Every structure is written in structure tokens, then in C-alpha cells.
Image (cartoon, rainbow, N blue to C red):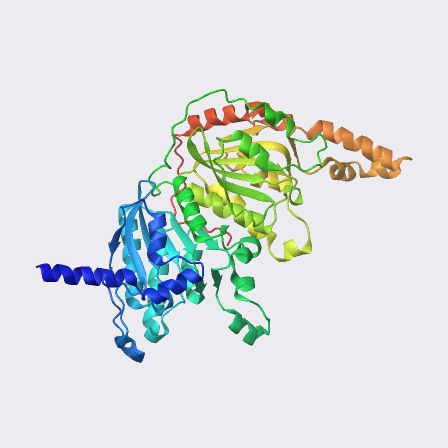
Length: 513
């Protein structure tokens, strides 16, 4: 018996060493943690239970039978993150470059199946050179098995992907189907075809970082939601994200204890500029309304004309979508619409109430937007809000013009409560343009055309550029003082916490993708 225990201990030691000490040292020299170190920082101390530690690949082609490592390039298991059950797989680049084999894929699929069966989040720590070429179609089939589970799990349990190293070819599609992607600056990258293939086919000279690095995907493509300075920061973001989410679609996000106090925020009275064309930072309003230091912004560097993220209000998790007047005047365009739509759908999938701050002058005009399908892409946000059944509240701080008024969680598409500040302007379009159209004849025949135009602009503004006509119709539930926003929202969300809303029976809708 003692001899067998010694053999087991030896095998465990070999498995934990992975590809060998030299390869582990090489990983550290690149500024990267090992697969096990990442799990150590992610999981609560002493809670990680490994599954499949002694698994080896089954292939004997191309000399693989002479090189076998316990675990086969991925560490899988379960444990607790902030006291809550979480499943994890961490690819080990020191073993065959973290490449995916048949058994490697089976280990990941096992973890995903357990996560679904037990209703808990799954985190993938990706660091892989892609499919193991020596295994041919078997490794490709392994990727497909994972993709299938990503889709089956979508909207059932939270799925988070951290890209800790290379992620190329078919490997990128599993993270792409998860809920949030995090990348590490300078050491991780994602692309379907690498720089060498790009050069061969298109003759473009591009580095891996330029083609698919963290900053590229955080600012240009929007593929990644967070670009992190290092791996420890990435892991900390994973922990923060999980704290705002429930374990699965049947539960509510965990609430923190909160003691009610004076909820009036007089600072909000002075944020909106007197000049309606002057920008301001919507984050100032968000920070004043929510619980102190609880805002976790998502997709911060992409489509900056809209702000999305998680926060807490009276200790409860909420999702925030807000037009950003400081960037492009807060207009909706292709990127901001798709960014916000995906965030709205995530919150709705996992019972996270939605708070919308609206200051939108409309959709961005131009041939670039029209030719690249602003119609279809703008409709994604409209669709996402319309199908959402979680509690939904909108606060109009200033402009709410045209079709963008409808799209930004208006009463007409199912919002539960809609508030407006006295500074709100709810109209088909801005006063200047409206006056030019409505009073075209009067302006063109006037002796002082400029003066007549300004007169009619003022007339239109006093009649329509306010929240009171919408309030008369019931499209706005209440015009409130800015300082009362927090207290109103706390009461409204409390009132809505048991909301039940059923969509019509159907297999699924056909969102305009």
C-alpha cells in the first residue's frame, strides 16, 4: 500500500510539473504565469479540486507515443471564487504549446458539462497554439465539441474567457461565444489567420500585436471587453465580474448588505451644462447615483459614445447603459448599438435589472454608417431592449431625439419606469432643424431670414424641447429633480424586484444579426 501511495505521489508531482521545470522557467521569463499559478490566484485558497490530472493523449502518430505528459496540456477542475462554486480550465502552454488534442478537449467538455448540470459559472484560461496538428481531424472535432457546449450553455450559466497567450484559428471561436473576454496586453493575442498568412495572401506587413493584440481588440474590433496590464489584473477582473452575476439563469445576483441613509445627491443638480450643445461626462452622473465605487465599466475603450457596465444600487447588482455626450455627442452608431445590445441581452439572460441614462441626439448620419448597415445594427439594440423581461428603468437627462428616443428603452418598447430631468428635451429632432423644416415658407419669405429662423427655433423649443408633453401622454412617469434620482431609482427597483413578464411562446426570436 505504501508503495502504491508513493507511485501516486510521484505521478501527481509529474503532472504538476507539466512540461518540465525548464519550460516553466521560460514561461516566467515571458512575464506569464503557469496554468496552475493562474488557478492559484483565481480560486479561494484550498478550494480547488482537480479533475483528470493523470489523463494522457492517445495518439501514436508522428512520434507522439514517445512524448506523453500527465494532464495533456490543460488543468481542469472546480473550486470557489469569492465563496461561490466555479468551474475552470487552464491551458498549459508548457505542454505541446497548450495545443488541443482529443483528450485535452474531453477534459474541457467534462468541466463544461459539470458546470451546466450544477448551475455554476465556467472560466476558461486560454493559452494555446491551437489544434494539435499531429492528431488531424480528431483535434478539430474536439474544438467543435467545445463550441457546441458554449452555445448550449449560453444564457444558462455565465461563461468567461481570459486570453493569457496565443489564441489563433478555430481556437478563437470558443471565447467569442462566451459572455466576456479579457486579454493581457503584450502577451496575448487573438486572430483567425496570423501575420504570416496575412502577408502571404494580402501582402500586408503586420505584427501579432497589431493584428490581434489586446489593445487592438479593445479599441478597434471590440472583440475583448477588458485589456489588462498583466495576468494578475486579469484574474482580479474575473473575480469582480463574477461578483455582479448570479450562478445561473434561475438565480438572482448576490446582494450586498446596505443600510439606507440620506439618498439625496445635490451635486447632480449642477452637472448638465446650461448650453445644450456643451458636452459632459455621463460617468459623473453614474458615479453620483450608484453605490460608492461600485461601477465596473465593460468595453471601456470600444464605441466610447455609449457607456455600459455593472454597478450596485442599494447593494443590489444592476446593469447600466448610458449615452456618452462627451464622445460624438452621444449619438448611436453601428459599434455603440451592437456593444449595448449584447450587454443588454447578457443582463436579461441573468436577471440583472437595467438602468438607462439617456442623452441622445439621434443616429450618426453618413454614407459609412448607412453602407455598413446602421439600420440592421441599430435594430439590434431596439430588439434587445424590446425582448428584455428584467426590471427596466430609464432616466432622460437631456436630449431624446428621433428614433433614438424609441430605441433607448422608451416606455413604448416595454420600459417599466421612465423618469426625466427638467433639462430633458424629447422631440423628433433638434429645434434648429425642426424650425427650418416646419417654418420653411415663413423663413424664406421673411425680410430678416436669420431673425425669423431664430424666432421660430425659440418657439419650437419652448413648445417641444421639454419633458412635459411626454409626461402629459404618460410616456414619462415623472419629471424629477436631479438630486432625487438615486432615491427614486432605489424605490422603483425595489417595487419591481418581483416583476414577472413572459415572452410569447416560441422557439426563439430572429434578432437582426
